[in-house]
Image (cartoon, rainbow, N blue to C red):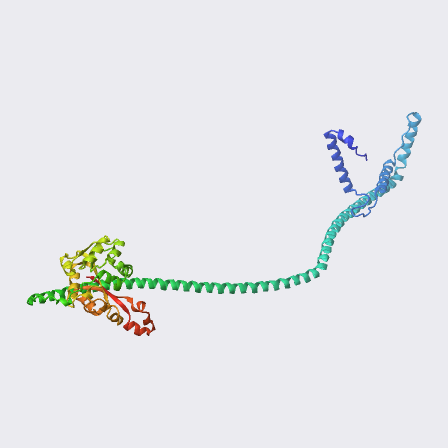
Length: 477
């Protein structure tokens, strides 16, 4: 069989030559598959059938040559010799016929053996291929088994380490669970505490809001009750006043009271100096009278009965409240005017009677009523109620006879004082005149000007040595 051309020569072939070479290779492969030689896959040796094939070919050649005449060179002698040989061959044909058949049968036997051996080689080659494939599979299985043996050898160490890690992880998990449980309980406790605090705060806010709401309701209720009370008091006092007026109209007109004897008239004294010594300095009086300022704030016109040196007029002027005063003392009125205050000399009863009804909405009378006769005080309160506008306020300040110290020190220092007026009596006069919302304020504690009273028991000091002065406030209904 001819060898394949070199690579350089192959590079010079044309495509037809390449296609022809590919066909030759395919035929060669099929021939090798049909007639395997050498060794099969896996190094299994195969029987070499080429000598037998050559012997068969030679035997077939000899069988074909039996009975034939060998060619000779041309010529008459050769022709005679050839003719003689043919004749002899025909004559011996009966003798060699069996030999020829035997030779042909032997050749056929060799051909059959050759085919059988070829099939055997082919089967051995197939078995070799199959064995190679099985060997490859066994090799792969061995690789897997080797890996499995490696895994098994390491499994014990892995299992021990895994069990150790499992134990460690279980311990860590239990610790983490315990920590989480403790944290959960702590959070629950904190949430419960915060919830309780929140509930307490909300409850406290609710109670505060409820208390404020209740207080507001109570305040409005008391305001409504006070308004209703004022209306009822106004109606009652209006009826009582009408009854008294009708009763007074039915009685005969009383004769005027005789003039007081000369010895009861006020002595001729320097009353401004007297006030500085026994009443106190003007700044001291103003400081005490500023307590009445909230009562008169916002009033349209305020009248000060017995304005004296004008301390209360100054307080009202500083607060921007319009006010005027009257007094019987010419020196006091001159002093007030020198301060730029509106004051004039007049009798307080004449001043009140000269006013129109509702002309003023505030009247102040400080340290004056204790100078009046007993019968003049109800008249003063009644005139004030008649001249005040609706809602107007009357404030009357006087020494407090409930304080025993007043008789030992202050009351009888003034020779013009007639008699002290107890707070319940003055309150009664206010009620009779038709005032409502009456309030009693006790002023100037005696212990401040008489430190010795501090040694007395508190309840005794409060009962008999309380406030030196008091004031009654009432509003016209």
